[in-house]
Image (cartoon, rainbow over all chains, first blue to last red; front, side, top):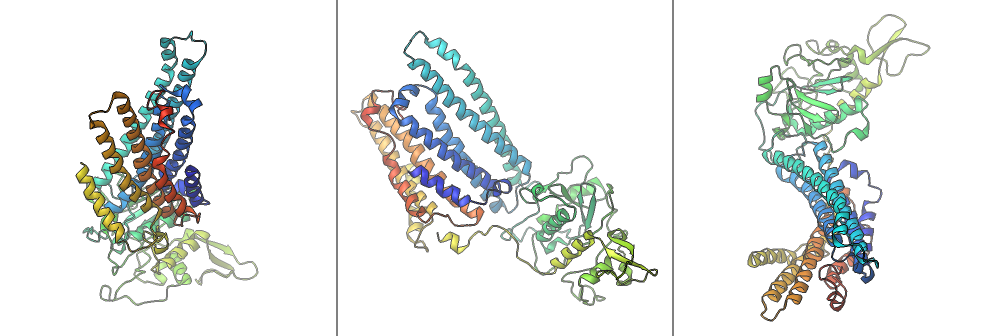
Length: 423
Length: 131
């Protein structure tokens, strides 16, 4: 009865949110644990029947049930709790989604194999002992169970490997090596670094590349948004973005290190490897709400080389947010709507005469006017009979830029909603 | 060890009695139940072991009882408390069933008593494997 209520409660709570299993390591582990609890309890119930017990007593069956309860249920739930708590304690996200995956699958399969081998081994040896023809002697039965012992060893190896990975991951988190991007609102504002104007670029499999010069004092949020948006622009599928953008490269080989999104990289524009080593990843900068943020975006088509160093021909969309007059006397607030942004992308110097940003002509199509002029054609002088029309990429980029102007709330799981807490 | 535990329990119970919300979270029920049951089974098991007249068979019984309590009450309660906290929290919705509070607390209060069948049934068979 109690098993049923617990199971029904947890499963119904999950109801319709099973995709969370893919996104949230906490849910992954905890829900696995909840299922394992049901299984362990049912097996415990069965084993407490005297008819069943008369077969499986004296065997590893009992160990298998304990294993299921202690490891697959309790430990997995506790792993889920660790995956939930630790990022909130140290103020940063888990570094590697693949490490989490490895840990999960190692634990799930390893623990499952352990429990299964013990339960089956217990059943089989127990049945052999309880068989009416008692010609089977003790050594034979023990030899029979050797297969299950080997399976147990394999299970322990898997579990051990998974735990090794988890321990390493945990240690990395504690030492805060390779800080990821998504610092939470509650994270320490004191984590500010000096080089706040490091330029970064995002790359996405070589298809397109967004170079951004983020003033990350404005918050890691911006970097995350850039990552999300780059993912959207580059047509990454939603499923590719498991576990939030929370990875950071450790500068393997000569590659500069930076923030890793799944399939995307947000890298500092370091010119030398030594400098790249010295540079702190931007996300540790914390947040200062009043500071400006600048974003420079470029899409070199299918180019795999690193963008050139900051300052030499640095491109830019202008200071688009919170630029204060005392920092930039030339700054005049202009209404930067979609048309402005599109025109700025197509021909920056028509708007900002001294702009160093290259024109993103490839984000636009030049085509013949057939019949009526297109609605979103740019108002630029070109030859008669033609019009400049933005591609969808340009539109989504502009949409993103416009969306940055709002100070929207950071989306995250609410930590202290009264209605949930009041339950 | 027990004294250290009692200090933890004391603080937790003080927190619980001065809680701001009158209807506790399901997790809290489990945790409070675990707070009570663990020292009870711990003390009882130790006391039963050091009693002078306890024979080997009864010692085995006590060991099985204590093991079962440790798994079935302490670990299960803590684990379920964590699950009941984490799953609704991360999914960001309430626990669905309206009866959940009652059933959850029902589980935690009755589980110490359903730990196994009658002891007499377990005694002839080897202890610890009767479940």
